[in-house]
Image 1 (cartoon, rainbow over the protein chains, first blue to last red):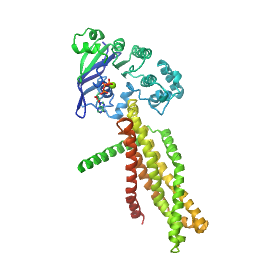
Image 2: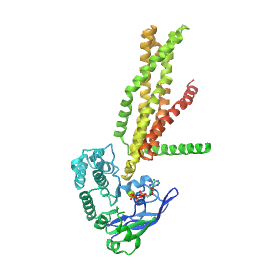
Image 3: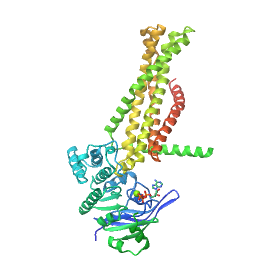
Image 4: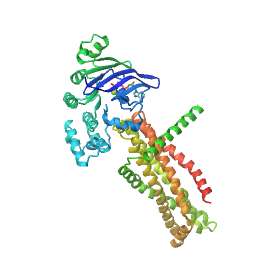
Amino acid sequence: MKDIILELKNVRKSFEAKQIHNGVSFHLRQGETVGLLGYSGTGKSVLLRSIIGLEDIDSGEILYHNNRIDQLSEEALFKVRTKISYAFQSGALFDSMNVFENVAYPLFEHTDLSEEEVEIKVDAILNLVAMKESKRLMPSDLSGGMQKRVGLARSMALSPEILLYDEPTAGLDPVNVDLILEIMKKFKSAGFSGIFVTHDIPAALKVCDRLLILKDGVIHFNGTPQEFEESQDDFIKTFSNSDN
Amino acid sequence: MMTNKIRKNLILVGEVTEFFNSFLKCLFSRPFYLNRLYEQIIELGLGSLSITIVIGLVTGMVMTLQFGYGLEKFGGTLYVPAIVSLSLIRELAPIFTSLLIAGRIGSGISAEIGAMNVTQQIDALRALGTSPIRVLVVPRILASLITLPLLAIFSGIVGIFGGMIIAYTEFNIPTGFYINKVLSNITYVDIFGSMFKCCFFALFITLLACYKGFHTREGTRGVGNSAIWVVVRTSMIILVSDFFLSKLLILVFS
Ligand SMILES: Nc1ncnc2c1ncn2[C@@H]1O[C@H](COP(=O)(O)OP(=O)(O)OP(=O)(O)O)[C@@H](O)[C@H]1O
Ligand SMILES: [Mg+2]
């Protein structure tokens, strides 16, 4: 079995009076893609944000290569975030920069590559998400699906070890969904790991090695796609039949 | 009710101070974004230049008109150059320019950063391993610290020039005499004191605007509300603190 590269132990998180996570524990192995499912508002996005320290957790531990990262200072987290990358649910592109500049941003910030090298690298990534033709466009000129693909490209620019995908396929047409799933598979076959938050169960079954279901602030289910499909748990059965 | 308001304001002061601290921390450590600073100076400085000229010119002309007719009754027209230039350089130019910048830049910055915040672009900066304070706040505060004092002095000079035109056309004060009087009355202390005040105002305007942008919630409506909040607060602070700063300058230099 491959090494565990990310582990959450008993993570709790609340916003004022509202308890979101009530002891979330799971781990991620090298090269593994894990699906994180659950109804809207159960705290999937908050969990991804907590992993890279965009949110402070109340208690529990988050370990990356067996080192705790939940108590690091913001400055120390910058380094972690070049290794664990978060693809935002909304894309969150910088609207003052064009597509190329958005994807080049992390490269200019964290590498010593020359302008030409960055250009080559960005072109390659944009090619992967089929956005190379639009590289001089501004985010406001892009459709929602295109923005998502650029956001995904930007989060892949530094070749992170773990990619946290926040609903990368939501709101896309079937062709685009397949395109994103192909990218995820490529990323995975290159040996990288990922957490795939989605409402799209068939998509999750296609690319994930394991599925997690978040319910009432804890991981209610943790198993392979096969175990998921064969589960006799009432909640899982309703969940997998619902169009959640 | 009252205590609640006081409590809220105390929390605000605490948060702004903390924000200022993180600004200082980023200011004195690498990396620096010189190209962003340059961009901001151009946007802030050149962008505000034309209105600064208009404001300065009109103020100088109106002041000369009022003082000219007011003092004419007492035969004091010859004091007009000194009075106009001193009040322009010491008070009117810095105050008007700062209020203008508070309206233009303060609202602009808070709306821009606020919009970035509600669309998760600030989070994206952090998620990509960079500091939003370093990228967004430091260049803006530095740019305003550099440009506002210069704009104010420039506005004052334009105002003195406007005064000169009115002094000549309305009151027959010879231009040579006017310039002579201005130069013999205005000292370096007046100019640097005025620039010093502007630095204070610049810091307040941009700091509050950035702070508010970072704390903008509730989508698009929040963005508008933040802009209003910043303009009202900073205008008040400029006017009130001007009194104390002027007092301080007088104490120190006389
Ligand atoms: N900054 C915040 N302050 C207060 N509450 C928040 C904040 N961020 C998220 N929440 C709350 O946390 C809960 C979980 O939100 P989250 O966005 O993680 O849900 P989700 O599982 O990603 O849902 P979806 O599938 O719709 O994206 C929601 O009830 C939300 O209102
Ligand atoms: Mg979400």
